[in-house]
Image (cartoon, rainbow, N blue to C red; front, side, top):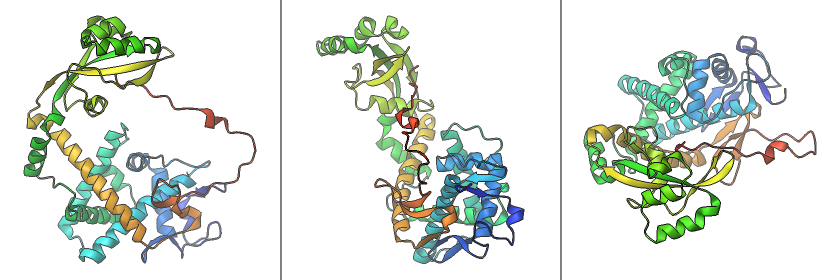
Length: 364
């Protein structure tokens, strides 16, 4: 129970838990505080509402999972939510003090729409099928939580518009970006070759001699597509695999296999997967617009994340130890709330350390 936070909210109103009381702050950012009772109510809503939990899982790229008993949530989940709260509060405080901005009713309405869209996009990207809509997830939040999230979304949106590195999501800007990167949205047809390790040298030698993609696939590929010259399929910007296929191709020239293969498992055997673009067709703007917007949003998100990290470094943050610790958890991350590791109950090697995660190929 040391690493679980009990969330029976009604039992906590006016009472203490693990030695701390509702008069203290769960998190504080530069003087802006969220009380323990408010934070516990938020955690309670997450724990009890599958729709809300699903969308927040997608947004945080983690699992806000339950604890060992009813109406409980794990310590790592509490720390994850504390991080999201701190990020939102710190950005809102920065916007308020730097730009002297307070969102009006119209901005708050836009913030609510934006937040619903962000939650929906996060769930879609994570391929989650949440039991309800993003609007229903917002409705499940306690009023104070919902109002805070909408207000902070509105202020984050305002900040993004002030960054020199962001691209406005206007029709003119989207079309300009498309024109400047039109080749990135070409529909592409690909061929593949699944080559056994023992044949890699022969495959490379044949490719250096100028053998065609079709000939190489017929001679060396163990994939069923090899019989037809490796032809695998065509991918337009509207395809869910488009971005990953383009990433695999990189700068590979037309009718040429990539020189650096991916390694995949086929029937229990490690095989080298080579991919070649065989045809590229310009996609009209109206068909590529969704992919263009997604790319711009990703660029804007990267710029906003960089700005957010700078804001977090400059913020005075406090966290109730019951919810985690604030600091640098690793050399590759910025400041965040993390759960302190507990001493191991055994000196035995954790067998999970010897496990690796298997991944499946999009070309299967």
